[in-house]
Image 1 (cartoon, helix red, strand yellow):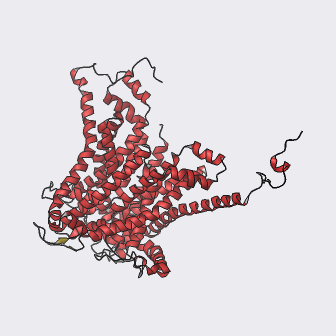
Image 2 (cartoon, one colour; image 1 turned 180 degrees about the horizontal axis):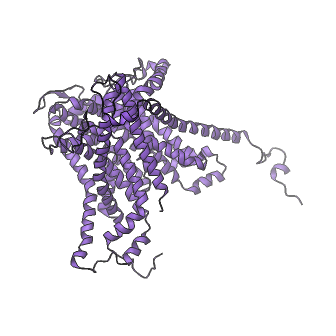
Image 3 (cartoon, chains in turn cyan, yellow; image 1 turned 120 degrees about the horizontal axis):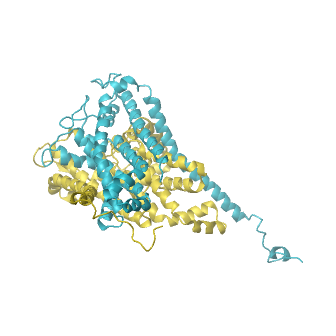
Length: 306
Length: 332
């Protein structure tokens, strides 16, 4: 009894190689696949290398001038002088980001709850679409619009440059990010939880505040922290709304406000050693704030139950 | 599993006093207002800026504003006296964005393919975080490091090399290579838009049905053949949508461009020479602008808004057609 494959039984004109023999074509295709894997790895390197260089540059140049003095004093009047720090900028950035968070988080959460309660509604669809579109609005246009709406006296509210105008522009940039991420998180809350709450006779607002929001809390926090980090790192709209200041400003309106990014921009475009050194430390501070926040966000996300 | 015979529980409506019963309608109204705020803010921004910019459009004509090549700013407080032609800025914005897209899209596809298909599973998460971190770095830091490191050590030498090869004979790629140029601005943009395109690509590649991939493997296809003939064609419209989202970002990116493009008004034909862009003009000249010039900057802003809006809406429609669950996550 012998079952032979045609390859073995029919030597001659009809001969085909065994499947175990690698043909030159197969070898070429395997080589091609391996080579392309190498190319794809290179593309990854092309993204990782600039990030590594960027972080290294900011760390190595920024660590030296960064320190207690940098955090607690304001800039000297001349960019030539070394020493001094970004206290006014740090205050301004945190102040404006804080006010922007207070504006954008309640609005954004409210909108996100609305969108999850009406997943298929026509109006909800429109809002969802324009929220997505709003994430792509150029930040400098937001700055111009807030200038025209709030800062400028002719036709606008005439609040002047300052904390509130800066915070408003950051809030507009953060709002769609908060809505999007919150909606995604709220949608992950199992409907059973909500129905159990309704079944116990809870009202809609009670269910939302006592069941849905707590269940989604870690995810919501992650999204909000990422949005805040984005706001803290924005500088472009502040050129047109906060304008910049050379002292610590606590007023909400009526006085231009400082910002780390704005001071950096002024400092590193001047050819003076002192200003550039402080700008490196400023860059270090900004990176520490934004990356620190995104790390916190990831840690919170890992604790998420849903 | 809810029982099929009973209706799902609804929020209770009829218990409690009249005051308590009013709570839910009020709650819903508040939510409605919050949701509407997005639309209201968007509408207020575009209407207000258009009204402010109108005198400039009225004097130059919309086509004249878009195609004019002269930008000389007047100093009036009440009327439009200067000449405003935005073409050099529009050209600069479109040019650097196009170059950035040409660099970033192939890289993003490569990174997404590597992350999804080739990387060992323990490496996937760190890779995703690393690319997303690129999106978290503030634009001002890109501008700074671009100015003090990348343009000096990387982009200008590479530009020098390209201008020295036979390709340098083409006016578009001819020297001399300057530090601040369209080229430098385009390169920083490519790095900055990489994360969003990569994130969308990762999401759409993950949506390719496993059956199709497995069928191809069963036929003896290599990894590369599966990637290039199954995954990429299947995700084509998603890639287009992601690229357009990246394009929208590139068009609107401000500080890195403002610092690196060089800000000259003459449109040079070579990418290695300085130019100007719409966002760069707004950021660089706003602080010294007279009221009249601010209207002109608002007109530039409105133009920029409409260009990015068209790109973004098209991108969202394409991405949404692929799948509503494609969001891009933290990079967006």
